[in-house]
Length: 206
Image (cartoon, rainbow, N blue to C red; front, side, top):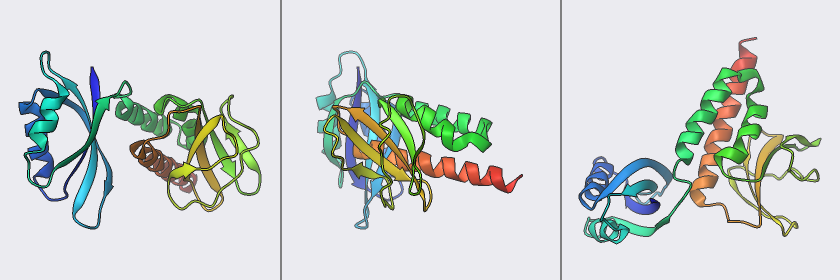
């Protein structure tokens, strides 16, 4: 059974190695690690996707990590979407294979990558300019500087979005939930930034 562990740790060299060693000693097998955010106070929050060895329990990982100086387990739980980081890599490969269509290909891939119901590209001037089939057509541009959860009058959809450039954003949604995790929002921002860079490079090479 895969688990998602969110942990706060010192943002200094060697911290991640100590964390990985402790998880291994407690019977955890790390599948992937994602940095969610870094704090000005010298700490970082990481999401760790792991599998437990037969006979080992996630409580043993929590107990072991709590003995490490400066490390704090924020939560741990079963997480069926543990492969999402690999889906991120597949999405990036697809974008680089067709750089001139990178922004549209990003929208096509987002529902799969984030297990969302739809994705859309929204322009400040023209509204929805590209979307998957289930996306609402009345989405409006919002002035966001970084990836964030978005408020909506639509009670059936939960939105989050990221800025592509000064005039376009990308939005993904889920019908009824679950809420987007901070780590998912961070990943959305990262992928949107990559897609924009790939698109700009393709235009510059013409």
